[in-house]
Image 1 (cartoon, rainbow, N blue to C red):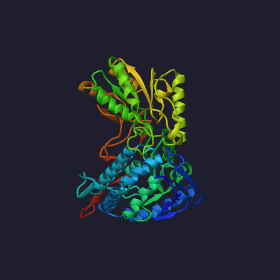
Image 2: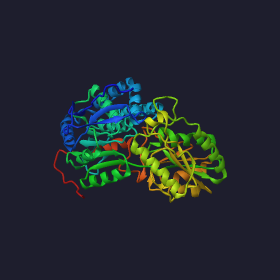
Image 3: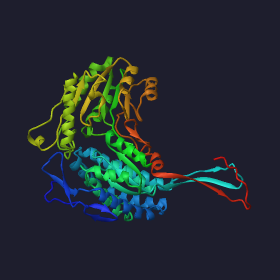
Image 4: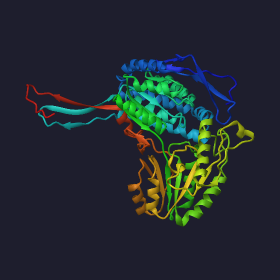
Length: 498
């Protein structure tokens, strides 16, 4: 997919593809081959964001009054179109974000799953009825759209995360302003094309590309934007949540992770190893659910380390468009610089560099942002590499004398997204489930991912607000309205307590 002619992509506002108010554009390059230009995109401003908000207000009047099953039909149509464009979308993800093509194909499948599930909610937008304490009174609840919602997404899942915000927001009847990560806007453009072809009315879904500062601030400050759904760094998410709270906006913020796997002495070592290597180095460690820490019980530590290094040494590194590649480049120069800085910090702190630790150069590696899979041992919980999110192919390994010490190490960070334990002892598995401080818990499985019909999210600095996916998605993207109907023929004195 080498670029021979640069395509300039526009914003999508009010059903029209338009240039930004600034008149400026920027280029996105392939992380594996930086001489290849993915495309040129609009450098948008606060004025562009406000134009999109105004368009969304107009679209809302139509969409909110469209019956939920009819809204579902549009999402089902978009799902059908995405299915026809699966290969194209996977290649797009790989050339703009860098991840292996197999991971990109999995991301497309994940987007399709959430669209299918969200569309199904069009016939399950349930309220409930309940007896009233008053005579001749009917009491029930209904769901109503929030209104205009801001959607802000990261670069590491440029299709799946937008889909798992946009589809639920649409099925609930909201109108949206979508701000994708500036590093990966092409997947967003193509997702908008899909919804446009599916027949989504003008103004219901609007796209504004470019740097996030001005656009994000405009969405937070606009009185017409009733809610923000954000996925990104803890630092940005915390600030966004605080500023939105001042304006009484509804917010969900999915943020960082420092996910740990515990390996006990009775674990199926082969199974654990497969999950850990994929969890740590798949997608080059650039997942919020990636495995960044492993805590190994003393009795199997030496065996574990020998097998871990052996498996890691066999991983192939290169351009993710090649289906034989296991580890692809990091997404950007800034990501590469950050990872290399943390590797330096780890060695300075006294951790042992057991494997990797180098940026790769020479041949095709000079064209991209390549860093070796890296493993640190002799790590203590107070080290920065043990506590801070690196978001790259760096794994820290700890020893623990028993399950209690392992859980203490797992819980010693400010994050609490995903975690895992490998054991055959059901008693220890449940002790772990009941005491580990993460929003998602896995037993004998990787820390990665989740299923679309279950809530996704974390504790502490990993997230705030209602969870994404599952039934939680409808809870966030709608308001519950309580209705009382007095159908008595005569006026009666109602009991009033509140």
